[in-house]
Length: 505
Image 1 (cartoon, rainbow, N blue to C red):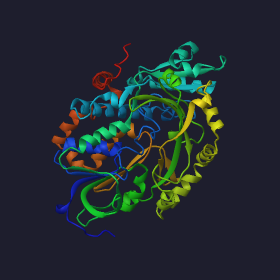
Image 2 (cartoon, rainbow, N blue to C red):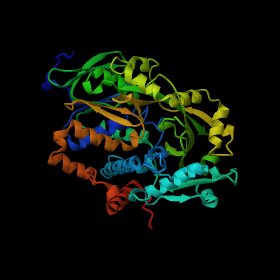
Image 3 (cartoon, rainbow, N blue to C red):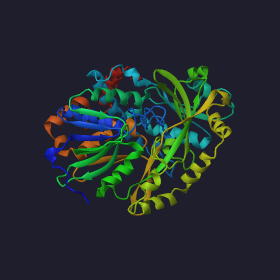
Image 4 (cartoon, one colour):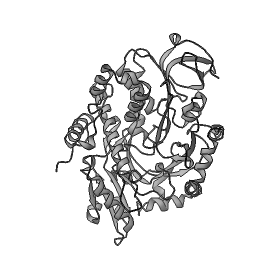
């Protein structure tokens, strides 16, 4: 039962953000721009920002814009392709680019190349059925102006120009196809997050605490939240009270949401999925591949495990990785505890969790197979994309943890959600972000939605609306429905972020 601790008048901060990842950084920046007088405290259990899901090596996908991720365009039983989610994600990524453009123009972010660069996005498939699917997907997506610059080919000569390493050593009789978007980008969310926090930490009434862990969350009689914090350096504990709390702790969000005891958080569970990469160590190979190439996921595979041969810029240096290979761990965070999963099971979520497990036996089978893989098995998967791959050029790298959302469902009892979920209290005093892909790339849209729920009155005010339109010029408009606005917006963001301009045609 909640106990009265302090009154709202005695709060220590207007806002407490838990977790120093891309979500908290984005929300903190938005709030500080919309209401500069707000006092904000940020708590992170590790000694650096963005060391979990937002880090470049931990993140399963960087620059998700639905250009190449085939799992965002599921095939229907009749063979048609559903593009709704792809369009939504592409629009959300354009919102993120507008936000970053605003931060660059205000000199809050420095050189855009420290966090975003152009990398072509390709989907690559083989086999008649997959080629038919890809062509249908291409034809459907091209109807939307967000994807009008997409190219499609089955021509081996063109493919050798697009992805020479993927075509080298491939059987000339094998039928293959690909789509390509030159507007694709690679985003280093670790670098971006740390730069945003560097700026936030210097602002008035903003305090950033590393090596601090949140232990308890209690709602006061006056509607505020008392947060118990432990300093991991010296073991000291203290209590802080805030009007609003955001739980953006990645895989650690679910246990904290359960501690809040809000009715809206009942029934949620989490299913952790770990990952590994094959990282290329041969500089010559790295230099010869310049694209994000996504294929089709195996049956039962979670979205974060869609195979891709991925060029990334990490700390200013080009890197090449393949994967991720999925695995299972009971940890909710890469730096978490093996007790995370068992301790998250409560009376109110055990039925949804069991039900979701029974309805996802393919996933369980897939994860068991992935865990049992040998180095040779991993190379077999890589050689489907790089036929000439040499084992000595690749080494295994541990990726981050993802916690897929399990939620109540009237029909099924419980369902496994492959996406992100914002859970907020009815009074808007606390919110948590659960789930994974495509989180980071759509962080701005997710946080704007959160503000609409938790700062409803302020978001409807002329002051906040005016400022939001400065930050996101297309706020409230759909780029998918307005070709001229889409082109104008992309030209503006591309110029500021030093990206390719639109392909003229």
